[in-house]
Image (tube, rainbow, N blue to C red):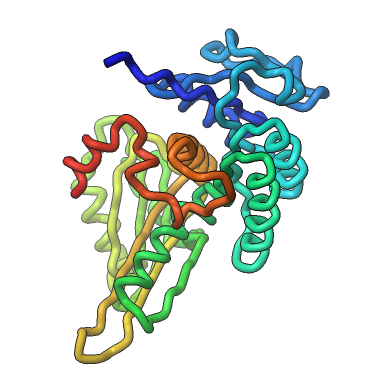
Length: 305
């Protein structure tokens, strides 16, 4: 059997999400980077060393043999960019940060154009909406009649952070606060240690301090606090099922993340699914999960089922 031809992707827009998309594609075995499409004002900008051989254009029509275009442009520019690319019959994936009725209207508008040009489109394919929407949907399916709360920014406690930083052996510290599953406040203390410092001793000292003594405190030594802070966002997805004869279930997803990186991961995965779809527009909850694994679908099924 001859090997499957890699799917050729164009990255449209080269901000943070576009750059990560390009890097992910360049590291993939089943995808190839056909072109980077940039605004004329920035088309001459320097690319990372690993991408220097990739053609840079100012219009999708100048790119050759493009199977899918990843629209890594601001949300207010997505619709116009999508129209231009779909008119060439090129399938698209966008990461428009729209929710509710706004996302529904966006999908309907893209759907009409995609059908007219016999192309596929996946819209809102990022972290939120996108992957987080899938988690919300599954949580709701598992606990019908319940309620969901989404908290996007993990609170930072400056007072607790200052105390942790003052401890001997701690180079830097960051204290975040979240709600535990029982509703009580919980402290997460991330500490970057001085060379040779005893992590166990510092963990015990933090928990024994009067500021933390009556609180549920978790201490996490990290190699680089600066890298952790660059991740930038936290989210807690809290789903509480209704009381009744089927039990009172409580589902909790907690994450600390770089949403630009996760958005790029979702976009690249969604691109793999496009060839299996009929023309029209879709959101992520309508896409079979196996389709987004691409050539790794069979292994993923063995690993995760």
